[in-house]
Length: 341
Image (cartoon, rainbow, N blue to C red; front, top):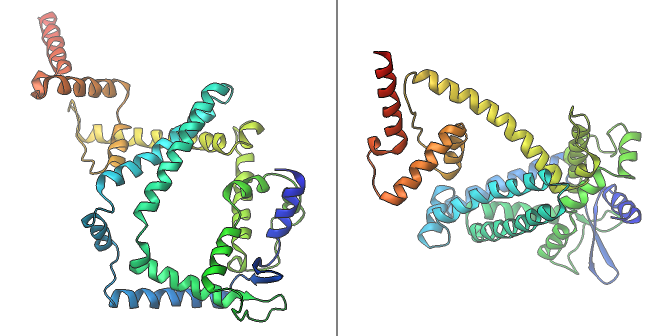
């Protein structure tokens, strides 16, 4: 992003409103809610939710059953969606690890885009009927109330809805929100970093964060994010920081290392509870739970598991004593006993 573009977007997000063009030479201004209005908006949601439940609209598990019953969603798609989260993270770690291998990195970037696209497709399918559940209806009512309450002319007078509907202004407002990519670029570069420094981290006039615009809240979050990165003991090279996917990969790798340390402690605890047991079985109802349990295995245990799965696939059915690793262990035990005589 060029400097003049960053200056434009920084100037825009510093405004205490969002400027929306609704017709030729007609602009309206969507202001953030006051604290009192924010609370009123939550009351609108709460009442709309109650009304939707009373009218018989589905919610929670009942709505999930409706989706499954009508072949809109199923457990297979949910498992795929859960696995995509892991695959997207794996690609970002791959981009970080291969940062100085451009050809390898390019492969990971292409895979990442494919996974993101599929993830969006699945989410769109899963939430395609949200407009008829209680949460969706309540959210829609709150958004309509919010836009109607906060849309004004330039002089501050309420908009009279002569040139556009609430839905049109809502759509344009959502379209005007800065993307994560843009916000991350702005948060780590000038002129925003200079403004942040000069104002000691308080660049906006409003005292209460509830009265910030959406973009103002997000730029503060991302600015603090990059400040924390800079304070890290093992701060990554600037090239990594400037690459969103590579930086995400660095963070994911760090998080996984800490998780493995915690899971290692959990594995030790399980082994202590079942001292003397060759194996400990842990119930894992979902694919994500299965992945957590898998991470408890060390390299040797993971190899044994793969070996057993391959044997099951080849032979169809194997009794516990028939697994090759179990048989080898029995042979070793027998030989040790013979040596001890």
